Amino acid sequence: MTNLGIYGAWLTVNRYCNFRCKWCYATGTKFKSEDNMPLDMAFKLIDLLHEIGVKNVILIGGETLFWPHLFEVATYLKSLDMSSSVVTNGWLLGFEKFRNKVEKSDISSLSISLKAANRQQYLDVTGFDGFEKVREGLREVNRWEHIDIETSVVVNTEVIDNIEDVVRLAFENGSKSINISLCGPIITEGFFNSNFMPSPWKIVEVLTEKYEIINSISKGAFSIEQSLPACLWPPDILKIMEERNQVSYGCHFKERSGLIIDRWGNIIPCNHLHEYPIGQFGTSFKDLESFERFWKDPDLDKVYRSMLAYPSKPCITCSVFDKCGGGCPLYWLVRDPDLVIPEGGSYEKIS
Image 1 (tube, rainbow, N blue to C red):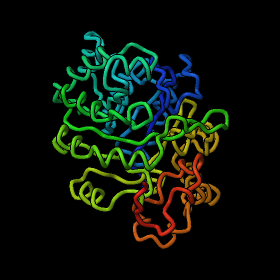
Image 2 (image 1 turned 135 degrees about the horizontal axis):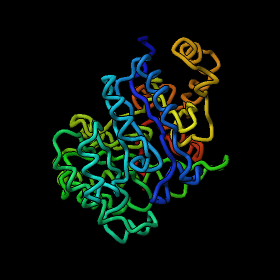
Image 3 (image 1 turned 90 degrees about the vertical axis):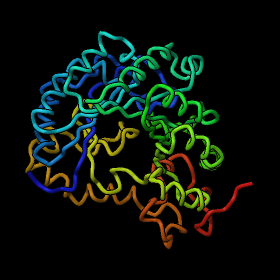
């Protein structure tokens, strides 16, 4: 075991999904049913991650529950004293027979991503009439005690105006907490689509206005993945959320503390950047020794530093830059940071 500061990993095990969420980062992969990570590759990657010192592996897709090797891999992870977190849209959990298999499996936790607040909205945003099965599955698995259940929602243009209803859906069906993240761009064949990203000002306005409602519904048990420049938020609301542990900043990319590996064994810097691999298992590295060389290579370091550069001049002298990093660097692929970040580097109310 070595110490490279890598504590978690994401394995993108498939690309097929029965939903077609309008904002999905995987849209460019075409959701092909044949795009499954082979079992032998999964085992080899897990062995390497174990040597690196990773303790938690997040299994994502596509719709992860459709991956044919899911239960076998969860058992293998458990045998290595590693945990498995499965990200799912929750639809298959609405079927008792399949749900029983999950309940008896070695999966450590489930993260159920809610897409909307009601049946019609689910149909509108996913193109699939899956609401009732998602709700049934959510309600039933939240009764389990041996598998941790997490609930999440992405703030996008389709749900931002009734985001509190999605939170209510979660808690009315037994959720103990909910994670709220902010929509990023869709990247397909080099083109960047921000159609489903609300403006940063609207995100702040809506979440600030609805803070007390969301806080009441959840009894304080929510967290916002704050990926905007901190200076866009009213300082008082940000302070309240920080004091109540209801906000988190940054991601694995900033600290290089995580690895995302796609179905072909490519390391990608972010789920949204699936078209831009920075290394590949079997080519860039094949074992712990070669991985260390790859991970410490100066050229790779330049890739990380270029994406984490100050997005705007006010960030250079900002006292909280180390916390927010000027916001998610993906935002600046579709927006001009100089038009977003206040000139003085501090909160300015937008009329």
